[in-house]
Picture 1: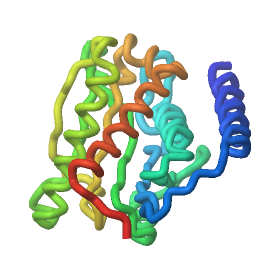
Picture 2: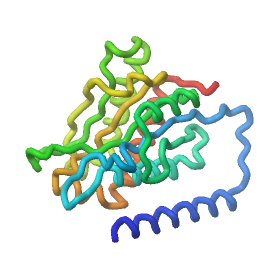
Picture 3: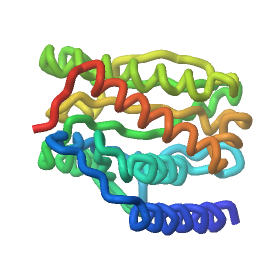
Picture 4: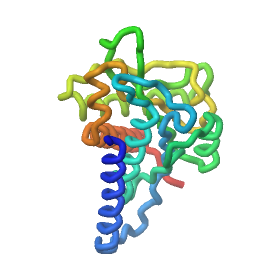
Length: 229
């Protein structure tokens, strides 16, 4: 039932967005640069449900909803263009996800996930992961960490009032090491924690996460002085 309601909301948002873009007056940006391309990955999908948490909540559902909302928020943004690795509940291998970003020459790669710790339902919070620095060039390793810190900071800013625990930025052996651009993986919360699972399964909380991630991406691009080609 919740999933069908969410689908209706998403479809309505796309229709409203399209109407607003059609009605909006044309803008002239002069010599403004093209928006920077960012590949956003909705973790898992299809035969890979990811983690299963409180009340049967599946990670793949949350990640796709947040990714789609992020793309909607950035739809008419002159600075950023979002490309999703998947638009539906389908399986895509990790290599295919990264290959898409590399092929498109993306400026950034951001993967959205939800955490789980079945041994204790009390574990909670958000964290952002990067590939081990010894598996990346010095420039990319620095970019990974700055991007991760920007995303993590914006999550705390936007969701701090919800009692979100800041678990920080950490390195792991991740498929992100194949990315030819700065890359980070965001664990948006623990679906094995009842309180966090209930929030993660709501449209408005997902929207706040999407807004935080978009702000984190734009803050990174601003601070790093990234330029479009």
